[in-house]
Image: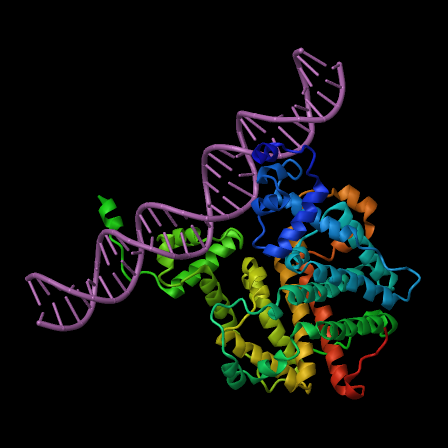
Length: 225
Length: 225
DNA sequence: GCTTGACAGCTTACACTGTAAGGTTCATTT
DNA sequence: AAATGAACCTTACAGTGTAAGCTGTCAAGC
């Protein structure tokens, strides 16, 4: 009987790393909402509760996943020009979303607080400081650029390109007739346009940051209302 | 016996509007994740399944909530200067987050497709067109500004200011010692700083859009890498 | 006034979730 | 050989959205 063989549990078979690997897989195949401990266990060939020996809760597992993604990030070479370092750091983060699209929505809204994540945050804020901004402006620019990046990663991986969340949808004919601006813009909302659109916004922010540093005294912007 | 009175169900007591009102309440008091049909029903003084007579699913209910929020938005007065119209439209959207903080995370990531929402989208994209941008640039700028706005609303309502999501947190002492940049920046991450930070990033984008329109031929940015 | 049918709300049930509590098996140490 | 403790499993519970079917109530037609 192979049922007896099946019962032979291999001890020490599971590990945090294995579980994390499987979790990334399950999340991408089942979607973020479709992920569950039982599905994860089934992917690992064990029972759900076995995972709890390695991670005391799903929250702890999620934290480990975020840590692994953020921990793999490296700070751009400090010898590069500042603008380029900034670009690289931002694109590195954005790439995580591309590599884990289903996880992106979770990842991007996760309020990091582990040593690994704080080290990365510290480096990124340091990058703003390296740009010549004081503590306050570094903090605010970090946030502002972060907003942009956060929104982009979210939209690129969980946004319109994946179809509407809405239950009641509108036909293409009605779209063309009643909402021509949306219709015309839709052409530039597809996956193929992501890079170009992202670059546009990113360049706007980078341009403005350089202007802010080089330019007007005390870092004032146009001041228009 | 008042139990007999209690049994007297008032017909037509529930309505879509009442249910929506209660849903907003429950979401704000219980949090987005804590919301459920059973809790909503209990807030309404009815059974969960009664709600299904008015909304065929939670998804339909959510759609109605988004529609109500978006439907209440108005386009800024067309006689105002363009930059001001843009600001107002953006701040109006942002205010929804402030008014429904717990719902913000859902609202902002919702892929709208109802007539009400499309009408609003159409107006906003039209606002970009009014700024003098062609269909392509309007689409891309709408997206880029949308990224920023999306990220801001998310962070302001579900972000760091609400405390970390992390299970394992780091002490203040360790923060000061090992992550000084984060420590120094933290001072500008609080709720009180939201407006100023948001304005900074928004002004950067608005400045750049005006430059893009008035300035260099074919709307080229600095072109630096 | 009585009947009828539709509507509004309720009851029950099912398949799913995270996880607390406690049971079992086995490699290692003594 | 016995004991220990790590690794894994079983069972159970309170919660979720919602399908299916039931019941009470009201308005309209006779």
